[in-house]
Image (cartoon, rainbow, N blue to C red; front, side, top):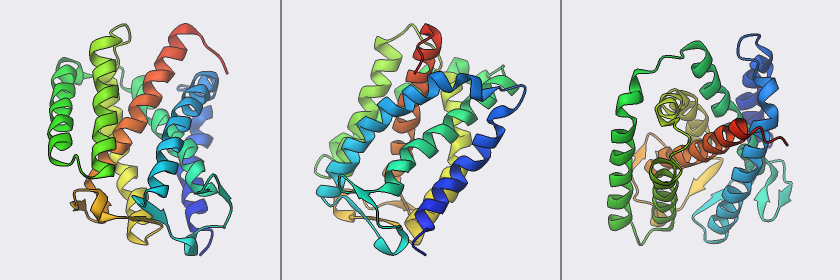
Length: 227
């Protein structure tokens, strides 16, 4: 039972890691771009995670943890910011290689504007709740920067496709984490609406996490930056 969260992390990364040596995708050859992206994004989200744990926005069930803690976070939670981004960017790259044509391109800006509008609405109605406020505020900043400031890298139509596919493992993995529960949420700090056992905000937490990773991955790849 104490290995539950650790095993979930291993399950998340196992197949993407093994399939990284697929001859067509050749994902392992892009590790020099993906790992710096994961590291930078991970630092940002770990700071967020530490803060939210101290504010009791969420907590972790010790029954499902191995008991190793760093900076107030379980080791498994820190591994989460390696395993999940790696798996999601792997999905992103596989879709780009196997399905290079993407008809979402014409709708990507409209989708971004729709999500920006949702962020503004959620900030207005959920400003008093830490998870809602920080989650949608951060997504608003990242979306606004990618779409309207850093216009050199255009990848959002590919991002939305990967995000949509990533929701499938998201519901499985996060469903386990929130149903058991391994991660426990303080409903006073979110809007209280859940999809099954998953807080509504988690869907957009995933979007922020994946978007920042993909953006940095694309930047590093374009500039040839290596770890």
